[in-house]
Length: 208
Image 1: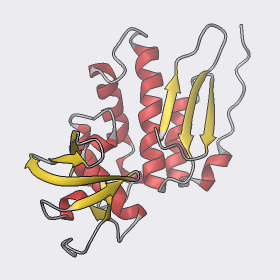
Image 2: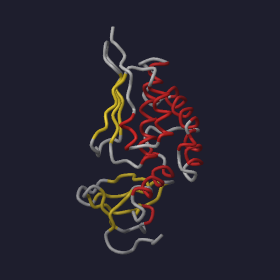
Image 3: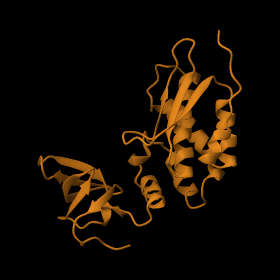
C-alpha cells in the first residue's frame, strides 16, 4: 500500500492561470500521480502512462507552450487517466470512452479559454481528435497565437516549394483540408494539413 502525498500545484502558475489550476486540482486530486514538466519535445506535447502496481499515474507535458495549449494538452492527458481508471485499461487510448471524458472536461472548463477560442473548442468537443494537429481550426488557432506572422501551407500557391523540418516539398493537389505534397529528395508523396506551419521558398505566398 502506498501513502498518497498531498499534491502541490503551485509550480503550474508559471504555465497556466489560477482558474485553469483550479480544474487541474479538481481532476487530479483523487489520484496518486506524478506530473512532469519537460523541455520541448518535437515528437509530442504531452503523454500519460498508466501505473504498474504500487506506482503512481505519470503525466508529462512540454514547457514553452501557449497557456491555453498547455491547459488543453494537460486536460487531454488527464482525460486518459480518468478514462482508463473509470472504464478499463483495455479501452482504446483515444476511443469512445476517452472522447466522452475529454469532451466533458473541455466543456466544464470552457470559460478558462479565450473568448475567440471557446466556440472552436465547443465544436472540437463534439468529436475530440487524438491530436489537436488533426483539427485544422484548432491547430491554426494555436499556430497563429505562437507565431502571428507564421505562414501556413494553405497560404502557398499550388506548384510552389516549401520546407518542413528541413525537408523541401512541392505543393500539389488539394484534398479536403489537406494537400498532396511531394518530398523533393525521395519523390515520395504525403498528405499534409493546410494548417501546417511552413518555411517559404520564394515569394508567391498570399499575404494575410
